Length: 508
Image (cartoon, rainbow, N blue to C red):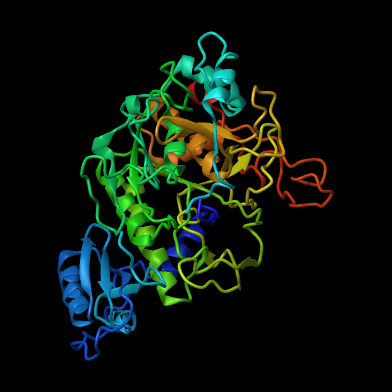
C-alpha cells in the first residue's frame, strides 16, 4: 500500500452537531447576499484542479450557481441537487476565490492540491499473502463445520461470530457497501453474496455502473476485497467466513487507480449518494478523505471539503444508511488539545502543522452520526497502532496486532481475509476493525429491519462488551514506554468507547 491513513470524529452530542453545522454554513441563506460574478477575465493557465461547490439544494439556486461556475472559468462534472453539491473542474488559478463570491454559493474549494491525473486506507503495513502450502496446513486443522481457513480466524471467535452464524447469519435483504479501492466480486468467497446492482465506480465524482467497474485495477489494490471478505465471505466450504455470511456486500470504488490510491472528496460524495439512492443499509469506510488528514474549517478549501462530504453522509443517514468508519492508526489521542499533522497535503508537498482535532476534522469518521471504530488484538487490548479518545470512539473490534499473538495454526495476530485473484492474506489496522463492526451492524439490521441508523448505533453500543481501562500503564509494543493513556470508566472509555462488539449477543 502506497501510504497509510488515520481517522477521528466528534462525539455525537447534539450541541456539538449543531455547532459543526453552524460553523460550516449549512443553514439556508448563507452567502445569499454575495454578488453575481462577472465573466472571467483571466486565462485558464493553471493546473487543472477539481473543486466542490456547495449551495442550497433547490433547482433554481443550483441553476444560477452553474451559470456562475461557467463564468468563473469552471466546467460542471456533476451536480448532486439533492444535497446541493456540484463537482467542478477548472484550470483557472482564480476559480476558487471567484466562485466563493458568487450569489448562492455557501462554500467552495479545491479538493486536491496537485493537478488532476487520468483517472487511503487505514491498514497498518502491507498484506501478508497466504501461500498455497500455508493454506493447506491451516485447512488440516479445520474442525467439522468450519471453513477450511477458519482456524486462523481468531477474530471471529473473539466476538462470537462463529457461533452467531448458526443462530442468524444475516439477511439477504441487508447490503453493506464497501467504499474503497475496489472489490473483486469474482472471488469464490465473495461472489455468492455480491450485489452488482448496488455497486459502482465513483472515481472522479460521477458514478459509473458499467458491469465490473467496481473491481480493483490490479492485485495491489487489495484493501477493499479484504474488507468485503471480513464482512460477508460466504460459509461455502471454500476458504474463510465473514462476520455476517448471509448478508449482501457491494463495492463502490473511490480510490485513484494509480499507485497513490488516494480517496478524493468528490469520489466519496458520489459514493455516499450512490449508496443512499440504491438502498444500501450500511457503508464501510476504512479510509480518510485525501488530501488533508485534518480539514480545518478556517481554510476555505478544507471547509468546503468538510461541507460537501458531510452533506453526502447526512443524506445517506436520512435515507436509512448507517455509516461506519475507522478511527486511524496513529495511536493519537483524538480528544487532545493538539495533534501534529505532518502528512498533509498528501497529493503534493506536505508541511508539518499543529491542529486541534475539535476544530480540524478527519473525515468521514469525525462527522456527526458516523460510527467511529477503534482496533483490538487477540487479547482484547487496544491495538498498538489504534487511535483513541474519550468521547470520540464509539465501539471497538478486532483489527489485529502483531504484538498480540494468537494460539492459531499460523500464530498470526493480524486478520485473515480474501484478496484479489482467489487468494487470501493477513492485514492489520483500524481498516480491519471497521468491517467487523459493519458486519455486526448488518446482523442487527437483519434482526431489526425497521431500525434507523441512530437506533442501529444505539444497538451496537448496547451489545458491546467493555473490558474497561487497563489496570497497568499501556505499553502496546512492549518496549517499556507508556504509549497511551485510557480515560473513562468501565462502561465508556477512550480505548473502547462503549466496548468491543459482540456478534453472538447481537443475534440473540
